[in-house]
Amino acid sequence: MPSTAIFSPSCSSSSPFTPFAFSPSSSSSSSKAFLAIDHKQFGSHSSNFRHHHANLKKNSLLFRKSFRTVAVPTMAVSIEKETPIAERPDTFLTEYDEATGGISSASSSVRARFEKMIRDAQDSVCDAIEKADGGGKFKEDVWSRPGGGGGISRVLQDGAVWEKAGVNVSVVYGVMPPDAYRAAKAAAGDQKPGPIPFFAAGISSVLHPKNPFAPTLHFNYRYFETDAPKDAPGAPRQWWFGGGTDLTPSYIFEEDVKHFHSEQKKACDKFDPSFYPRFKKWCDDYFYIKHRGERRGLGGIFFDDLNDYDQEMLLSFATECASSVVPAYIPIIERRKDTPFTEQHKAWQQLRRGRYVEFNLVYDRGTTFGLKTGGRIESILVSLPLTARWEYDHKPEEGSEEWKLLDACINPKEWI
Image (cartoon, rainbow, N blue to C red; front, side):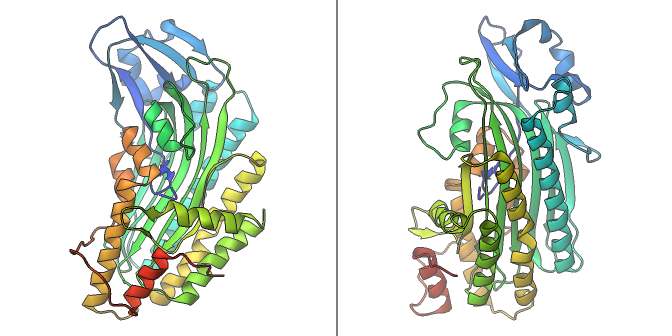
């Protein structure tokens, strides 16, 4: 997450939530595969789906307020890929909300406002990144999924300041297999027996500057809902928020790290003074590379499965955190982007980026969620840097600036 997911995932955390859809294979069988799809997905973005499975409505077994669960005689289930679309829609929820018959609920209101928040955040962060780069422009891909929803992926690559900067949003819904549900949830003991109807929206970004004295930033904010599984009709819908913002420098400048953490604390303190110390520790624990015995970076905040507060309060909190990204990070970039550096400095940055890759591919739940749900692979892996480096048994000299960074990753510090 803080790698998403997306979601992730996320979520995490490091990848945005990435949608998936199931479609029956051509094989025939008396067994049945269950799908959860949005009502309006029989509409314009799913003409192929409608054409091949026009009898789905007749076979529907159960209708819910937010999801329709249908039984399809089929032997196998395959994952449908995303479809590029030419223009950004005003909302990815239009079809989803119209499918509920115009019912207005607190839940659907949260979905709509969260989507607006993440799309506004995407615009503001991308504007700040382009301004700091001084010439680079984001490439944008807009996509939809037959199973429900879509997203906007933006990447700036090989700019003057940024080696690679990705800022993605997704708003998706469908049904997830049990292993994807386990990847999406922080609580290991929270298991589900079968496919779970879900709704997820999130923004995920990783920003890799060229200069080794300028730190990498990751942030991810997401909202998730699950409906009752098919074998437990009437069970209550679950919802939760997750996210975080964390800093990964190759070299420590204490004023930068203190500034970054101060902005995180400021956002947290507006809602609960316990948030910053709690979420700071959570961040240190989450971004732990077990096989290395060190953290990915110098932390920030991270939270997941957050639903023990008022839903409106948590929506406002996620909004505040997303709004703090630019003031927490861009001043650091402006200070460091033109700092002279040597080949030795660059080589150390590449080694630290190797750690970044290791964490994201081995441990990050957002990446895992995206891969397990057949998500858009370019969005899932956008968090990886263009270049990284691995050296056999590399150890920085004790007392060096490189050693100080490694020590701080092994032994997390209280920066403010």
